[in-house]
Length: 230
Image (cartoon, rainbow, N blue to C red; front, top):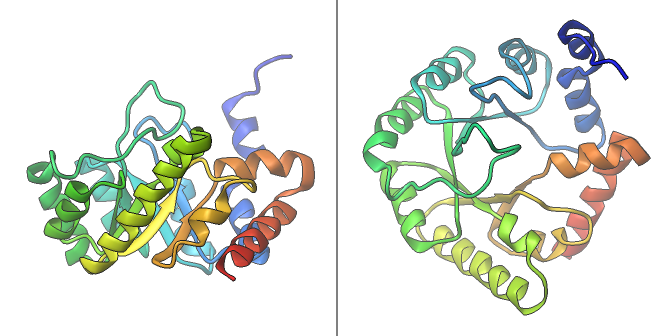
C-alpha cells in the first residue's frame, strides 16, 4: 500500500467534520491538541474549529511562546497546558507544575489576562494541585492514564488517588477535569467522582469509530458516564 500524500490525507480527515459529529452525538465541547511538530492537526484546523464549531474549544498546548501566541490569536474558551516529548505518540504523564512554576507563571498569566480559562494537565498529587492554584489556573485535568493501565488492587489504589485529588483540588477552588486512556469499561468509576466536572476522551473514541461509527461511540460513552453519575 502506498503512503498517501499530505494533501490527500488532509482532505480525507477533517477535524471540523468530526467535531460537528461529536457535538451532534452529545459532546459538550471539543478538545484539540496542536502539537509543536503538527503531527495531529494543523494551525488551519484550529482556526476552523474556533470559527465553525458551536461548542467551547479547549486548546491543548505545550508551554511555549509559539503556542501562547496561537492561543492569544484564536482565543479558545480554554487552554490546557500539557507536557510534550517529541518521541511520544500521545501525552504521557502529567505536567510538573510544581517544578516549573517560574516558566509557567507568565504563560498562565497571559492566558488569564486574555480571558482564556487555564487548565493544567497534572498527576493526582497534592504538590501539583497547590502549584496549579498558586499559578492562577482555574482548572486541573487529572491524568487518568496510570489508573487505566493498572489492574486489580493497584488500579483501586490509583482510583483512590484520583478521588482524593479531586476532593482536595475542589477544596482549593479548582474545577476538576480528568482524562487519558478512558474507555467504555473503565470510565464509570472516574465519572462517578462527585467533583469531576468534565472528562476529555479522544483516542479511544476515534478507534471505536472504525467499528461502530463516531456518533454511536460518543453516544455510548455519554450513556456510560451518565449511568455512573446515577
